[in-house]
Each structure stands twice: as structure tokens, then as C-alpha cells.
Length: 85
Ligand code: SF4
Image (cartoon, rainbow, N blue to C red; front, side, top):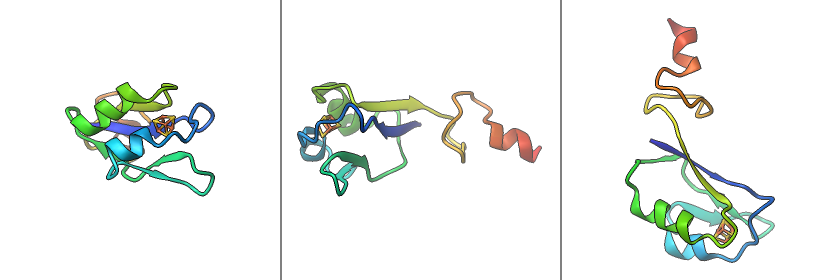
């Protein structure tokens, strides 16, 4: 799974990602892109193409464990699971 992130400092609000992947990216009140979903599958074409076509590289698809609740860790066995064990 990939966590969907947009670097708001890099986004220029061009709308490319929203038109290419409207179910994944929306516009916030400042006209900048914001993720509509938390995670996408590793092979989600729309998300990958939007990331590749973003003119400023603002879109980040970050690897996370499939069962990760926090969405912040990068390991296979995420911190939130460790705490439950
Ligand atoms: S394509 Fe990139 S710069 Fe354009 S709105 Fe989306 S995140 Fe922002």
C-alpha cells in the first residue's frame, strides 16, 4: 500500500493531478491539491501517473504496511502493531 501525500509547499495548484486522478486528489480552500483518500494500492495507475505528471514533484506515494493504522511508519511491522503486541 502507498500513503498518498501532497507537499503543499511545493504544490502550485495547477490541477493536473485532480484532472488525471479526480477520485484521489481534490482541491483545498487555497486551491492546492489535497488527497481525498488515505492510501492506494501499490499499482494504482492514476496515482502513479498523477505523481509522474506533477510539474513540481509535490505528490508523494509513500510505502506503508497494508495493516498500518498510523500511516507514518515505513516498516513491514508498523509501530502501532508493536504497541498492541
Ligand atoms: S499536479 Fe502537483 S502542482 Fe499540480 S495541483 Fe497536483 S500536486 Fe499541485
